[in-house]
Image (tube, rainbow, N blue to C red):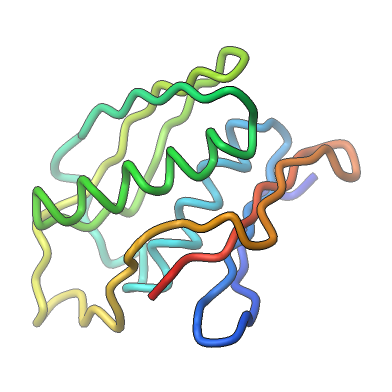
Length: 138
């Protein structure tokens, strides 16, 4: 399975999808898709690592918690992220988000993501890998 991400249309909001050979890779790719709503992830330098720890009753809630933790960290730290390392153990996620301080001139942020929603929320095995998707409120 090819690791990748994409956006999909959903009314006024934006859908984010991540695929990976593992569930952790799918979560990383979903996070990249969310960052790509704001800026080009490749334009974000990996200068600082932020640790994130989430636990939820199931995979779908864990995806929402993970993406919302990133939204929180972006807001509080005034940062953008361009790379992620996710480890999953059942419904417990430990991750590093790598990024840098937001620069309007450098990153040209398009919109502000307010949070991940439960709309089209899904974490499922597909084609020998995993898909993680939801809609983010912008």
